[in-house]
Length: 130
Image 1: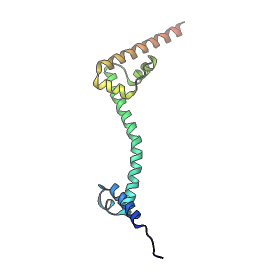
Image 2: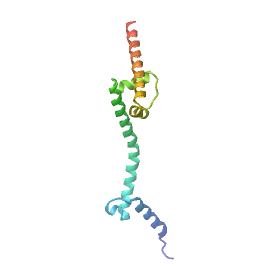
Image 3: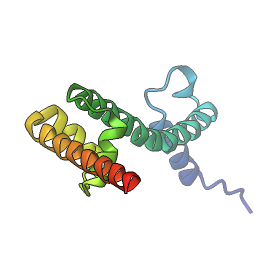
């Protein structure tokens, strides 16, 4: 009985890996043996960095919000505390967008947060006094 190597399937598998490795440098894009390792590693980076990208965007949004709120005389943490006290549920992405694209709306939100902070502070003082 002749030896069967299932050549079409093997060739397809190798071509798929080499297509995926197109654009890699040197033999990592030319030789199957090395391309396979490079593609596996690239998939690991791809998976990890999808998670990282979310964290990087959150960091960027926080920086933008912080810069805009400091211009209004409030730190980032106090702004978030004031928003929670005022029961304003706006996520960081939207807040950052407002800070960049619509400063008046952002200032209005900051003023509401300030009012909620002032109210909470007065309530605390009256609680301690009475």
